[in-house]
Length: 353
Image 1 (tube, one colour):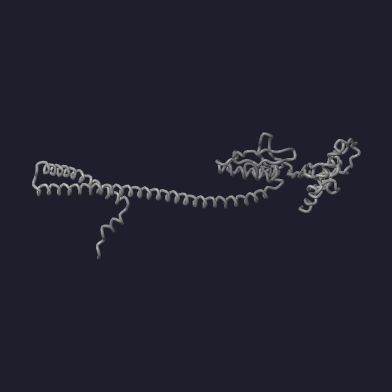
Image 2 (cartoon, one colour):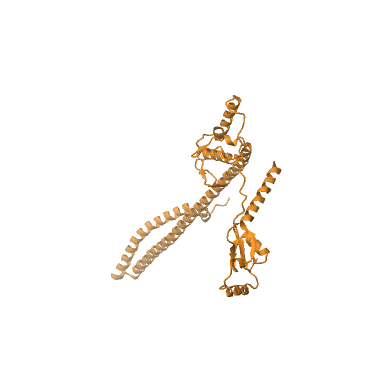
C-alpha cells in the first residue's frame, strides 16, 4: 500500500491543527533565530579579526565563508518566519471565517427549525379556531329566543335579560376564551343600536370554567323547577328581535346643475334653491334633477358657456317663486322609502316563517 505523503496528510488536517503546527514551527524557528544571531555575531567577529590582524588568505577566506553561511542561515530563518506569520494569519482568518459561517448556518438552521415548528403549531391553532367558530355557530343556534331572556349576566344597568341569542352566545364564548387564554383581552364588539352606539365591553372571566351553566342553563333549570313546582307561571318570556333601521342613508353625490331649480327638504318649509354650479346634493334630489334634465352627473361639453351665462345673470334679482320647482319633497321621499323597505322586510320575514 502506498504511503500517504506529508503534504496530503497536512491537507487533511483541520484548520485548528494546521494553526497549531504552524505556531509550533514558528516557536522553534524563533528559538533557532536567537541561537543563529549569536553565531552571526561570532562569525562577524572572526571575519573582523581576520581582516584586521592580517590572517592568511586561507584563514580570511574561511572566515568569509563561515560568515556568509551563517548570515544566509539567519536570512533564511527570517524569511521562513515571515512566511509562517503569513500562513498563521491566513489560518486564523480561515478559522474565523469557518466559525462565522458555522454561526451563520447555525442561526439560520435554528430560525428555520423554529419557524417550521411555529407554522405547525399555528396550523393547529387555526384548525382549532375553525372548530371553535363552527361550535360557536352551533352554540348560538342552540340558544332559543325563549332561553335568551334567562341570561343572568349583570352589569351596571342590571340583569342583561334583553340580549339577543347571538349576543348571549358571543359573551359566553368570549368568557370561555378569556378564562382559557388570560393573556388575550377579550371584549364584546361595539354595535349600533336604535338608541345609539354601544361601545365595546371587556369580558371578565368571573363566572368560572363553565359560564354557560352559571349564567344561562343553570337559571333555565331553576326556572324549569319553579314552573314544575308551581312557583312560576308556565309562560316563557321570548326575545323579540327589533326591527332594523329602514331609513335610507343621507348620502350625497356631486352633479353639474345646468338650470336653477328648487326642492323641499321638509313639508311646510321654504324651498331650497339650487343654483347653477358644480355641487353636492342629496342622492335622491340629484337623481330627480338628472332625470328632469336640470343637472348632469358628468361635466357637460358646454359647461364653460353655461357658467358664463349664469355668472352674467348672477346680479339679477328674482323671487323664490320664480325658480322652477323640481317637484321633489325629500322628507316625503325618505318616509316613503322607509315604508317600502320595512314592508319588503316584513314580507321576507313572513316567507322565512
